[in-house]
Image (cartoon, rainbow, N blue to C red; front, side):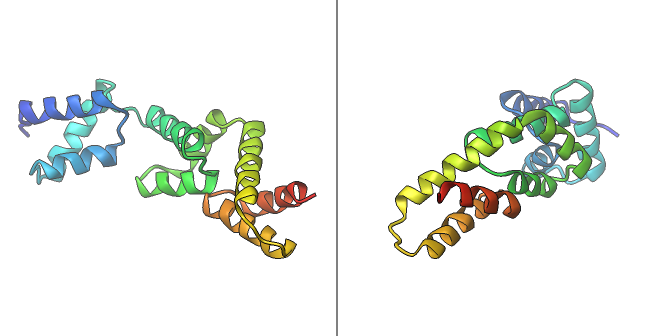
Length: 154
């Protein structure tokens, strides 16, 4: 199977600009009219072999960015990575290595307290529900959200 050197170089440049997943590279190649799955697979394998693509490095960078910058919870991060085709075990391993549990709880408290300040609701139960729904929509675990909403409401 003959791989066009130019398309391989374009894929290398694409990966050199930022961390990419194999899924991202596949889409990139398909947009450049690479139709053959075998060629796409071979290019991805070469990129991995030359360390242009590294799944663990990508997953950790993704987790870091989504948690630190977007304040996403573990559930939302995990779903996004599963959608990109990564395995659950690898995601869980990288998440445990990347997110500090204390920082995770502090971040959740902070976003919930900020949300509380923006809401002008007199009814305590409705306020708790709105804050909880917001945190769950950011991907935080409902059980953890429930515990923390109780602590910030006192």
